[in-house]
Image (cartoon, rainbow, N blue to C red; front, side, top):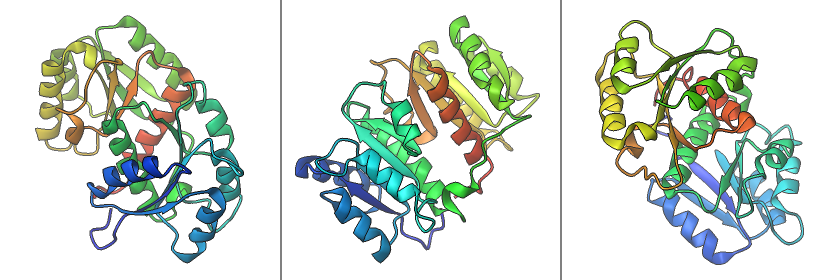
Length: 264
């Protein structure tokens, strides 16, 4: 993100307490936050000072977040702005959110670290020339390294990413992954926290210290009880296990696009 440009988020939520809590998270990241209490107010604010990212509660009185998303994405002037929906409903909501045109969905029960990671991701997109229009849907020839001692995670990753034309290389341990990385550099590395926090942290540091690997996007696969605090600043994204096909492809597609954007 350009140093001279201040990142801006438009936060839409009918609950004042939720707006205050979320705004404090983003403001602690040196992000300018504007808030709206309902969808109509939010849409009116877009013309005044378009943000780099819109984060809206999904369920609100009157025009809900899904309808607001469809309206924003239906306008040529605003459709390039990343739009994230936030919900406290069950995790079967991603399909409805993506069908509404949202770029992503966040659960109110997610780790705060995941909220920060996703905000950084989509601000990079929103502040890039063209915003979401710079994202491509196909990634034929791209390479993803999956580091996990779970054969299920390895095989699901290969199956999920096959429609994207992505080549998946699997490693059963951090040591095997380090060896593979001396021979080729993938666009994305998926690191299973099931390997252990220490082994995962050490591998992250190896990747970060090696020349020519700064563009590798690091994705953590985590269980419900795994915490991200010790590695959050060194990774780009995290997702919950078990991996779900549509969500996994969506996460990976975004990371493959981010790997192509200039660092900043």
